[in-house]
Structures are given as C-alpha cells and as structure tokens.
Length: 333
Ligand code: G3H
Ligand code: 13P
Ligand code: ZN
Image 1 (cartoon, protein in one colour):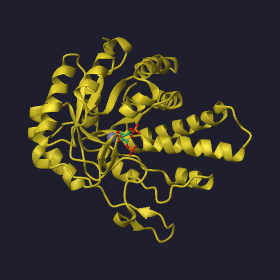
Image 2 (cartoon, protein in one colour; image 1 turned 135 degrees about the vertical axis):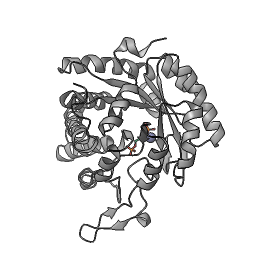
Image 3 (spheres, helix red, strand yellow; image 1 turned 60 degrees about the vertical axis):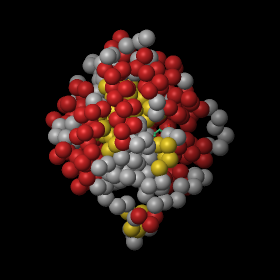
C-alpha cells in the first residue's frame, strides 16, 4: 500500500475548488510514454499550471502500472528540478471500469480515480460509484463519476450514439454516489473523428468540416442544479488541422478528422467545467512530428531524432492549451 501523499502528489479537491471559483479548468492530459510525460511536466512547469496526469486502462496495459506510478513520482522530482517550487500534480485513473481496478490504483499511489459506470443502468452506476467512493475516501483519494454516454470509443465501451446527461438526475446522482466530480455528456466524444460529416457543415473556402456546437443549454441546466460542483468534460481534443495536414502530407490518411473548436472549450472552462480531458491532440502532435522527420530523412533510425521533435511539439501544444484555452497558467506557483 502506497499513499499518494508520500509521492508528492495531490488529489483534485483543492484544484477543483480553485478552478470553479477562478473560472478556469485544470488540464487532464493522458500519458503512456516518457516523451509525453516529459512534455506535460515541462509545459506545466514553464506555465506554473496544476495538472492531472491520466492513465487509462489501455495505457496501464501498454506501459505497466508499476512503471507509470514511478514515472509520476519521478515527474514531481523533475518538475522541481525545472524550477517549479510547488508542483501540483495529480495521478488519475481514467475510465476505471471496475471496483477492483480503482482499488488497485488507490492502493498503488494514485491520488484520484474515475469510475465510469455510464454504460450501466442508473441505479447500478450509483451503487458502483458509491462503493468506489467509500473505499477511496478512506485514503483521501478523490473520485470522478460519469453520467450520460459519450459517442465513440470509451476504452472497451462502445457507444454508437451519445446520450446527453439528464440535468434532472444530477442532484440525486451526486448526492447518493458521493462522487467528488461528475463527467457529463454534452456532445463531445473521444478520438480524432468526433463528428460525422453529416452532423457538420462544410466551410466552402477550405472544404473543412465545421462541427455543431456543444449543448451549452444542458451544461447550464446542470450548473443550475449543482452550483459550484466540479464538472468534467471528456473528449475535448480540438484535432488541430495543421497536424492533420502534416500527417496527410507525409504518408498518413486521416480524412475528415475533426474536434471540438477551442472557443467552445474556452467558454466551457469559464463555467462549472473544471477538468478538461485531452489525449488525441497529443497523439496527433506526436505523430505529425514523427511522420515529418521520417519523410524528410528516410535514413534516420535513431528514435531520439524523431521522438525529440515530437516531444518539442507536444510541449508547444500543452502550453497552448494551458494558456490559450483552459486559463490554468499561473495557478500553481
Ligand atoms: O478516454 C480515452 C482516452 O483517450 C484513453 O484512450 O484507451 O486508447 O488509452 P486509450
Ligand atoms: P480526446 O480523445 O478528445 O483527447 O479525449 C480524451 C479523454 O476524454 C480521455 O478520457
Ligand atoms: Zn474520456
């Protein structure tokens, strides 16, 4: 049993309280390799932004939970080495699907876990979330739950259609489950193809897809029911078209990849949304940089020569998100 406090990590309670009050959102960046983690920490140290490092069950299988835990512990030391005096770093399980997985993470030094019971019937979602909350809270680990279903792929859970969170359920759900934050569905989805072409219009000049707006009316209703309660937005990558273009120009094939426009995320960050999840954009930055180097230098075979530029590109991306989209810069001096 390892407690996250001994690793220099923090849970989300204070981060979220300040973010809700201050009208900004905490970045929740997924990681599964060293370069992503280095880039996240460098970007956060340079901007003094609190951060949530997210590990999905897929990442856990890919990289090994033990190694990821030690990487997060190392991240705190690395942050200090970079001159960040009081790093606020949370290690969070993303989309936990069983009590056992959440318990294993709590026991293993995670400071926050998500139990995603959104695909279960309502009462079962409450019961599972409550069980995780009761366990996690003994160790001061915070718990994120989900109500409503996002379209697309949520790890092993596939939801063909999204079902917006029903505002009339949120008070009952939050009260009875005891969760610390709630992920909602208002039109975002996971991955790099968030909207089908038939859901979008097309910009006549560029030919690019223009996505439909998020359901801000649903968000406003939820906020009214649960004033000040931390709300989480999954599937919040913007799918920067410059990365898609670089990928496509260098041997890739990602037609009609589209994300959530940044101005909508900026608007959400100013509301009760205090955690914004970003994974796909980092994958796109990484892949674009790697493809470019390998296309320009086909003889290159030293991974540092293409993972290095990929890391630099991710630092740029994370700083942009922190400063221009979430507004979390300077919130963890
Ligand atoms: O919500 C899903 C995250 O983007 C993690 O994706 O299961 O491919 O690691 P993954
Ligand atoms: P994106 O696929 O939009 O980056 O969403 C990531 C996410 O929600 C992780 O839980
Ligand atoms: Zn998610």
